[in-house]
Image (cartoon, rainbow, N blue to C red; front, side, top):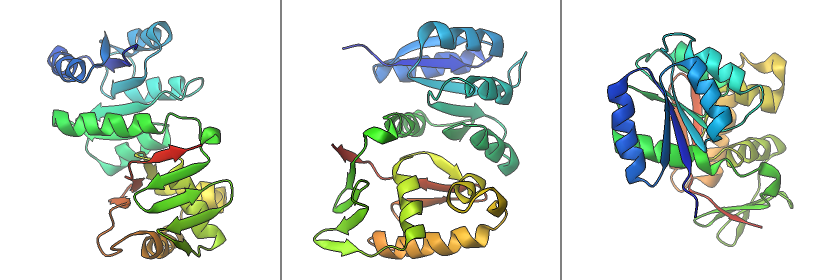
Length: 232
């Protein structure tokens, strides 16, 4: 069985060494690039399963690398950066990053994030039924059940849940969700989103006061953290 390929694009050799050890221990095949131009070349050469991308590259800003990549590829990308401002995170996620990890980071957390973003790599059209514990979302029949009970969702609540299910593990920004559910002219109306996320949590979460499925990323958006089983 072929090992998944992880491409590290980072100019710090110490970071690349640290990541190589952690990734190889998780059975990844590792490729490296020390700047943006080299990274773009390596992406076409090695066809990675996942990319770890630093924003502060010496030649091209990592955001520019990401934007160029997203013109032709949907490979999962996890941003690694010392930048910890919300605006920078939102810009990277809106540009197509799947997740954002701030340096310094722990290897176990990073590896968990990598596993999460790779789960969304299965084409959405192949998914017919999503299952997590006793929660089942039938995307063909538009039916949501928990245990033996069918959950009554409004059209908007179902559309929101469907969006989360199709992007498990990925941070979705407020702007992205609003654009997808309510259209491009609704991007500033976060109160809509807060209300509907609250309603959805009340219906699908075992404990809505301590949500385990739909996690809030403060100032950025939401992450659907369920570890799914897909049934065809």
